[in-house]
Length: 199
Image (tube, rainbow, N blue to C red):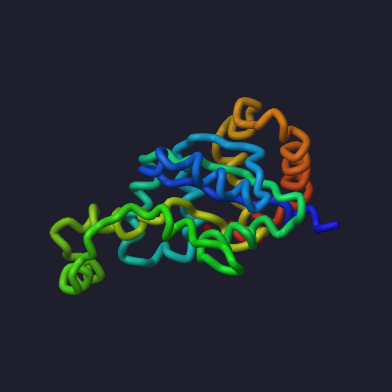
């Protein structure tokens, strides 16, 4: 059987994509990914810092972080009985292994920015710096973890930072068994200190 850890994945649908959220979840289901827990939440700042820790020194990070801690996302724990949940989510993100990229499929259409505006944004002096940052960093429908370990760490951190995150009202009733397995996994495999403690 697949490693129990590999059956779990994490993703969130970004603010501004509420109208196509059901379509994205349906696309997940077509690959065997089931939503076992879902909450519409404002991400806690420490969760944002963990999820985007590799971007914390980038010029766009403060504006992106502010947007993420002020606008709700739909946070989801996913389960795939055949395993490789996080790999499949990444395939759907990037369009790999015969899967269509859902980021490309559902991206909002915007007129491309000319090079001089992109260069001004990179230099941090675009007259609409904040808005351009949101447009360029949030036009990709959903975020997903880069590995199973990161997915479990994110789910564990959400439970720690967001009071009541795992209350029963966020669970899909037909998936209570998988949610129980997830919670047991998070309790028994506390790897987050190793990866998050420095933040």
